[in-house]
Length: 408
Image 1 (cartoon, rainbow, N blue to C red):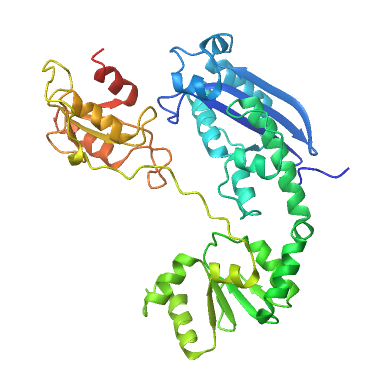
Image 2 (cartoon, one colour):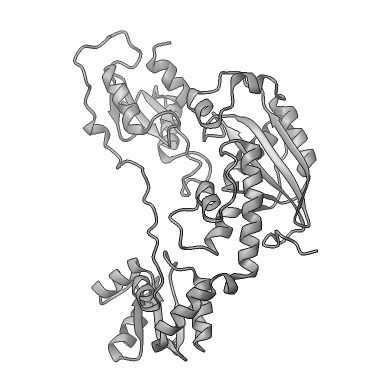
C-alpha cells in the first residue's frame, strides 16, 4: 500500500495541536490538546483532553476557540494531561502547523510538572508547504486548506486543526511525489517562452519570494540547462531575488568578506560574460504568474515620547500615577501603543528604555524574537542588574500590569 503521507520521513508519527490562553509559556496555559497517531499514512489512535484552569479563560480566547470555562472544568489537571499525552506520543516525531509553538508549551509543561525535557523530533507543515508552493499569499492553515480544497471543519479547535493538518500532509505528499505532473502545463508554457535559456548554466542565489525553486529546476531541466544553487565562475546566468537585484544595480562595490560573490557578479556582468536577472524578470520571461505575499497587519511602532494622555484629570492615588513604565516583548491582550495610552490616561509616564528612574518593567512575550536566546530581553536583564544594585524597579507580568491598571 502506498503511504499517502510519504512527505514525512517516519512511518509512524503524531500530529498534534494545542489551544492556549495566549502566547507566553510563562504566563499562559494550555487549555486543549488534540493529537492523532499516524502509521503508514493512516490514522490510528487519537488523544484529546481539555485542561482545568485556575482562572477564567480570557474573553478573546473564548471567542476565538469556542472553548468555555465549563469545557475546561471537565478536563484533566495540567500535570495529568501532559503525562497522558507523553505516554500517548512516546518518542515519536511531532507534526504540526507552526509546530514550534505547540512544542514550546508542551515541553514547558513537561519540564514544569514532570521534570523532564521532551526530545521528540518535530516536522513543521509550514516549512513543507514553503518548499513546494509559491503561488499563495501566506502559509496559514486556513489559506492552505482553501488552496488544496480541503474541507474546513473549523479552525482554532485542537481536534479540528489536527484533522485538517493530516489532510494537508496528504496533499503535500501527493504534490511532492507528482510535482512535475501537477505543474505540467506551467512547465510546458515556460519552456516555450524561455527558449533564450536553452543549454545555459544557471545559478540561483538568494531566497526567492515568488517562484518555487523546484519549479524553476523542472523548467530549466527541460531546456537542457544545468541548474546550481550557488554561483560559479562558469555560470551563464544568475537569478537573484528582487531586493538583492535592486541593491546589485545601485552599488558598484560590496563587502568582500560577506558578499564576495556579488563583487564577482558585478565584474562578470560588466565583462559581458554573465546575465543577471531579478526574480520578477524571470517570472515575466517564463510567463509565471506572481502572487503577492500579504503584508503584515502590524502597526508601525510608536515611540513612548509620542504618547500623550487623553485627559488632564487624574486620580493621584492610582498606583501608576507619575510612575515611569517600560514595556518589553509582545503583549497578549493589547498592542503596545494601546497599553502605553492606558498608562498615560491614568497619569503614568511611558519610556522606551530602562533607566535609574524606571518604576515598572512590564513583561510581554519574547518567545518569537530570534535574537533572544534565554527568554530575557536586554531591558529585562538591565532591570535585573539595577535591582541587584539597589534600585527599586518592579518587574511585572502582563496580567499583573492589567490588575494594577484597574487598581485592583
